[in-house]
Image 1 (cartoon, rainbow, N blue to C red):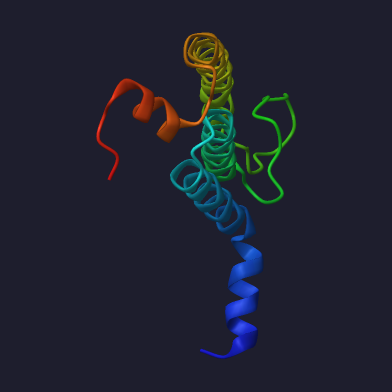
Image 2 (tube, helix red, strand yellow):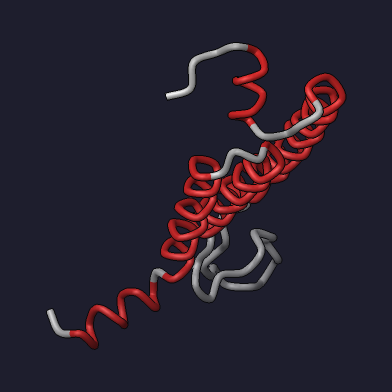
Length: 128
């Protein structure tokens, strides 16, 4: 397989590629930062990558909205189910983000910090 073939396949599957890259960025952010707000941002980046991935699955190149019109011959249609599911996922993601941020506010009021390791030290837990 030549480099041109690899680049052509990467271009054809760019939505999947960018979804994977976004997921890796969000996962890295969640694992490498102790700041709880940065962890929530990483979680939101991961959510966005999953949304992009599912919408990309339903996309059909050259496809139309799945509305049947009389007298129009059959053409390729875009699958509406992933888009509908993603709307629900977005609502859940916003709700989880709001809840997580409200918990972070409570933690800050109680401990005076939003650093996860510092909170564990204050609580007397072991940090590895």
